[in-house]
Image (cartoon, rainbow, N blue to C red):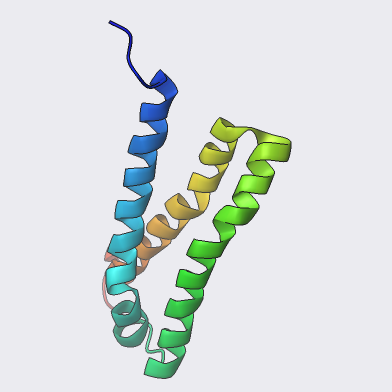
Length: 104
């Protein structure tokens, strides 16, 4: 029996759900993290938070142009995942106190 959708569509759907899950997870704790861990003021952390939201919802337009004109849809998905991965790594590393070094 033939599937009603192309097989690569499932890759895009699963990838999109993974990206959305990681974005919502970061979004939920970002303002708290900036305020308490990095000692950034409440006003500045709110500005950073809303700048992230603005970028997250407007950069797909640039991604669509790049995907259609230059990269192709699968390379665009691959390259657009790197900022997410780097951000997650930086947040994970920042939460490790002194990277396990003995106190001085």
